[in-house]
Length: 241
Image (tube, rainbow, N blue to C red; front, side):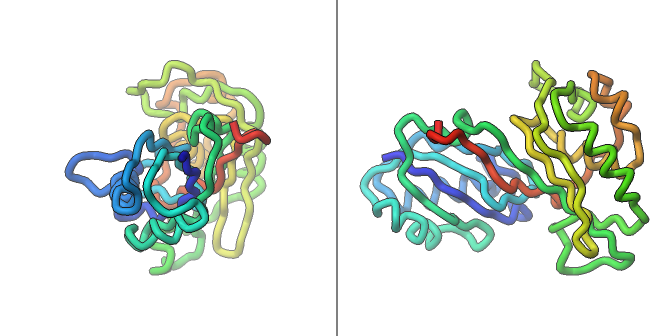
């Protein structure tokens, strides 16, 4: 049986999603819980391989399992074996051809900046504290430039395994929520550190227009810290494939 799991987690104590010997990761914790819950576990895949310290509200994983609880009880069963920082929000049986990563059509991220003049202990490792004034109108104008198809090589490390740097952005906007400024973006896929470097570049007041046609990484701004980034949602086609 193939399961589709919707997963939320606080990325603070983990060295990202992907299993790494000797380090705590979300994948390792989930695989351990799966092996405690089911007799057979295979082909675990995830929609978003988040980096160290990055959070998720609704990442999606698929896994083939046998010999355990039915899908409607799988979330509760798995949560008894997971650390408090990880929760299976929902579990459901998936079609055999459904794949968490390859079937995804878009992913949405949110980056949170905390703008209050003084820090908050409740925002530690939850947002980027940036108390200096930020111009929301200028940020919104910059975000508008991102929509559509662009070459984003300026927003990923120079040393990279990526061969194609063009991505299609469906939505990009800044939203004020009290002391927070949230950057929200939906795209077909992303380069490594792309969202964080876009945020850092916009926060630094650097013009994005000349950077979106394949400029060098040195032309863009800083990479914002990982703890302000959240994977919010993963989209799939109507038939789930």
